[in-house]
Image (cartoon, rainbow, N blue to C red; front, side, top):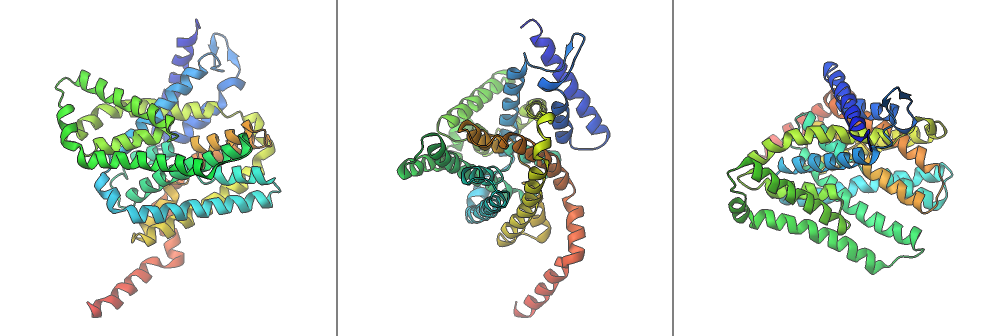
Length: 409
């Protein structure tokens, strides 16, 4: 306990150094912090009084990382309008269904081809189907794409993905841990999750006048205390209903985005978002032990390649059916590609049930690959679109369709 603060301080120094290097290279800090965390942690050497294993402070660093996820998703919610999301409801349901279906089916096929037993195959299908809300949020903010037309659909897919995750975890928990499952129990759990989300949409649409009055607090100090108290309470309460705490934070952000205090909240939250968000990605890296990865390299690499293909296809199909351009549709698939905290949660369920231990290194390496590649692809989505457009001639096809439509107008 004597060196606890020093360990946390050392971790923060490493995070600061990694962030400075990433900024100098004009690169996303996400892969830098993940790799940095992976290189230290429990398996790192102790250099004099500097202990890079972070064993004593690990729980605190992980908790600070969880706070980072809440701020990232809360801020993302502030950037959107519930009204627009409600209007896009049909596109969100269709797009989310397409996204989950493509990735889940590919996961089933891959697990079968890899010779995995049936339960391990289902776990693999589940973990490859859920994107990382935290990384997606960070990418959208870093690349200043929160106002882009495709971002509403990306946010909708993230919400839909959480509903799928709730259904999947409830079902698999019953099958793996209890040996059986109740259809009514599963439907009830999912129904509660959906009703909980709808409640926030209703509050955002109908309760704005009251919220404007209650949040009319002159003191910034008291104002931020009230906002943070509500944020942590809602996030914690969400988890008791089997809705991810991060999604609870996202929904609360959506509610506050409808109030006249949105800009004030956003201004006060940004420093906390950046600070705790950086700790999350570092803490995620700390959970990965490089020495365990060798035996699962090819298995994870194959799954990552399949996920890249599946995400791109899902993004294109979802975007086009929603009436978005090929360019915007390309951005969807490349932005929601990252995998992270939710994939690890799914894998942990399988490990708790005593399934094949290969799930640990496979998931760690799979998530690491896509946590690094995902933000890179998102950053270079315009370049990737330009290259693909030369092959598929999307612009030419669009122009020809417009010319055909003109005489009939």
